[in-house]
Every structure is written in structure tokens, then in C-alpha cells.
Image (cartoon, rainbow, N blue to C red; front, top):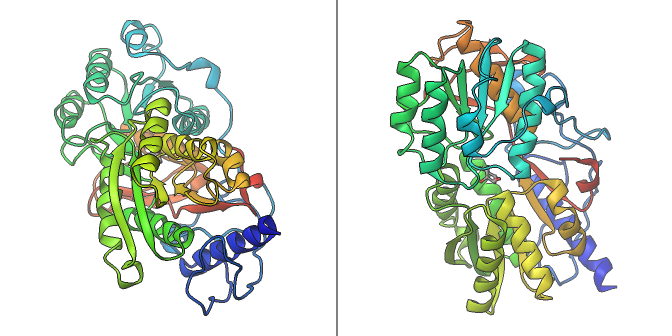
Length: 409
Ligand code: RAM
């Protein structure tokens, strides 16, 4: 009975969220959000479950649509292809620096994640390899073992020395990476960032996964739903220097100033460094420090999975909720257990695909990488670089009980 009303309530709150963000065409509930343990006041029609439309060509105008992608169809999403993955095994920094033989012959780009061993970045690499196959180029996947800017800079210096044809980087620090990014550009090596930006000057184009304010807003909205509109919430982030998380946190704080969130209290922000064990320990500490904590928001795929596990292990499912940004495969069990009933993300495979397509367009001289430049990114369709040097992938998707099983990344 409790489980049933919980399921109903989760469905309702998610529908309300989707509706508020322009997603499912559900009727707006007329009552304020009910606490997750209370029965729902008003039923709304269920959406058709399905996948994101990531596998199909996307008209540019579609990306300017709702903040949260509409869910439609029943096909599971296509997260890139698998071609070429075996040619670019993940390497540690040390390995990367001694591996030069691959960077000869064909046009070789390097996709550099914040850290290795993170399924989010591994999925981005699958998309990057799909682009590589289509474009007839080689994409290596190399990054530091931990999300550490100093290690990332060392790796980048080595790649510049090896004269790679282009760099696609998810930055561990916005400012610290400017000199190395600039050095690459000065050496004639195009630099795009994706996921997490180097500040302007250290890159030509940044591929943003979604509008940053929307990423922040959807997380606060989900947290408010789960908290029943009031109570203590905390943020478990990645590293303290992560450009993308820091931007989202600043925007979440702005969002919390809205009158509808007046009863939510952000009590703490802690950092798990995109390491599973540290994130788990930080989540445990939050739960201990704030016995009446209602929601942990983790805007990191590593942090959200670790926090959900910590809540589950502490037998606090139904009392403390976890939300934020996660991958469906890592979060499936926690959506089902109720530890993390809803969370959001974009398609990391598409992000990696778009990063390589953009880099190649610059390298081939199709575009200069300047504001106003237009180009076609394979199956994703056409894009324009905006006035800030940013290319926008599209809106995020919310994952929850009804749609989680249709995603596989
Ligand atoms: C982690 C990384 C990445 C971020 C996602 C949401 O995997 O910090 O940069 O975009 O979470």
C-alpha cells in the first residue's frame, strides 16, 4: 500500500515537473507539492514512456524548445555506435605520455575527459568513436586517473608536443587550463571543450550539454518535489574546481531565491571529487550531520550514485532522497528502490559525438570556430556557434520509474 501510493506520488510529482518544464502535456496539479510519503491529491494522465530523440537528426530549432526534453516513442535511445572503441583503450596519464605511435599517420584527435573510469565519460567516448568512424579519423581517449587539473595539464602538454590534430577537453579547472589551451591553439592545434569548459582564451568553442540555468532549475525543482516543498537540502558536488558543477551550483543558489522555494534551506555543499568512495563518505557525513536532511542534490554522475547507495545502506529510503544528474544504468536500482526517484541528464554519447564533429569542422577549415559559424554535425544536424563561442547540444531529460528501463547508457 505504502509502496503503491509512493509509486503513484512519484509519478505525479514527475509529471508535474515535466509539465512545468514544458515536457509531458499533463494537467498542472492544483495542490502544492505533497510530501513524498503522503498520498497524492490529484491524478494526472501518464506520459507515454520512451527514449530521448537522440538517435535522429535534430533540427536546430528543436533545441531551442522546452527546458526538459519531451519523452516520446518507445524506442530505446541510440547512444552512439561501437565502432572503433577497441582502437582507443583508456590509458592512464603515464601511459598516454609514452604512447606516441598512435599519433602518426591519420588525423588523430584526443578526447580528454576529467578523469578515467567514469561511465559518463566512457559513454561520451562511444559517441566520439562513432563520429571518428564517420569522419575517417582516429580519436584517442586519454585522461588523468583522477579529476585533477595539474595532471590534466601535464597530459595536454604532452599531447601538444606529440602534435595531435585537435583536442576535445572536459576541463578540470576553467582558469588553470587557459595557458595550456592557448599554447595548443598557438601551435595550430584546434581546441574545443565539452561538458566542462576552459575559460574563453583557452579554447575556441565550448559544447554545452544544455542551458546551464535549465540544468540548475530542473535539479531544484526535483529536490523541491522530493522534499514536499520544504526542509533541509544539501549539495554533494564533484571537485571544488569543476567549472561545470560550480556554474550549476551558483545558478541553483539563484534559483532557490524564487518565492516557491522559500521553505527550502540549503544547509551545506560538500565535494566528493568525482570519486566513488569519497562521495559515499561525504554523503554519509551529511546524513549524520543533518538528521532532518530531506534531499541530497548531486550534480555529478559519480556523486549521485554514491549518495543513493549511502542512503540505501543507511536504511533511510523514504526519509532522505537523492536527486541531481546521473546515468540511467548507474541509477536504475536506486530509482526502483526509491532512494533516488528522479534525476536528470543529457545524452553523453551525443555530447562526445558533437565534440568530435565540431573539432573536425574546425580542423578541416569548414568553420573557423567563431561566433556565427554554422556547421553540420552528422546525424545531429546543423549547429551555430553562439556569440559566446558556445554550441548547445539540447535540453536535458528527466529519468524516473516510468522511463528508466528504456535507456541504456
Ligand atoms: C560527472 C562529471 C561530468 C558531469 C556529470 C554530470 O560525470 O563531473 O563533468 O557533467 O557528472
